[in-house]
Image 1 (cartoon, rainbow, N blue to C red):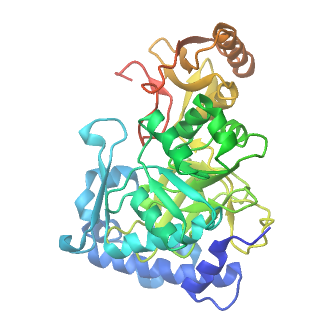
Image 2: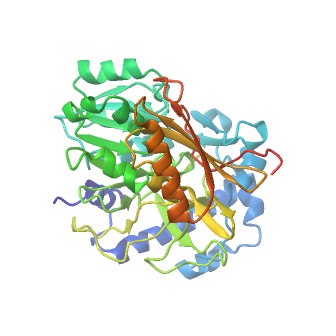
Image 3: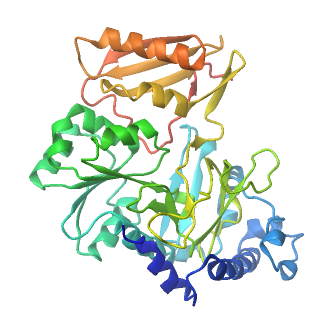
Length: 429
């Protein structure tokens, strides 16, 4: 098992003299202080946000942990006040919308240098899973300038790896034809969309697809198991969000969690209640700070994602930390009959059935859980639905209403970059 390619990249970019966490931590502390100075001087938001902070007194991580957090609500409220460069230097603006309403928009800004840093990370990160023998299909936004697809294509070109950027899955037949005609061996895409493809045309995966990189949303364990086809396909997980500069971390060949982009980002995991650091091995909310981000530095940004740092070194032999796979959003849960139900629990119970190509969970005003399944057309559909309902009732000890429809081969695709969640069917809630 080879050491993650991110190790050499991080050592070269940071110019640390020893391959150790201590050396890397020393580098990171220096970068944190530089980020604080840069943001306070150049960003209207951070000028106010850090007004009471005397940066000259910060000499340790413990002192850094007293810095106030930044949240997505701050970005929504004060989008342009975050910008730390003249507007003529902005080369890419990404607008994120979480619910379809204008008030929820977040805008993330990038300079040319910011985008180049992401290409650099993608170049080495993709070497964790592909080489010149592979042909990659990207089912993520693209190919417009500065999109994920555009940056991935540029990164893969540096390794002489052929890459086709098709964009978010919308035309199943077109995608399947592309895979066959171009002998695609690796797909990069949204978890539920890639699962959809594999269940509509499983023979395509057995014949062509040897590697998959899942990104943009949390990945259920059962989804990884199903896509792997009993080891025929290697399923890698990537952790990132637009606010991170798209990329945050990627699994190595061991497939046991992400190695992080630690030369560009500093990660923390905090207790969502106490706001204090948790111990390695304990789950909490992921928080990050950017290094050398020109357009829009972010300091102690709360992601809303739940994860933990591993207590064991990775079997690949790297000195880099490993973050175990994100298990979902903090708020992606409901309380029903004194039970706390998380989306990940429903995923494990529902997605294990090969006939399920998608589903939607709703919680209504009567405090009832309603699951709407989309199934492949199958004479056995009614028995599958019954088994799913029985599993939910048995495992979660709740009552649930389950309904279903047959897939019409394209309209049911979750054609969106918005993260999956449990929906409230009563709009007033």
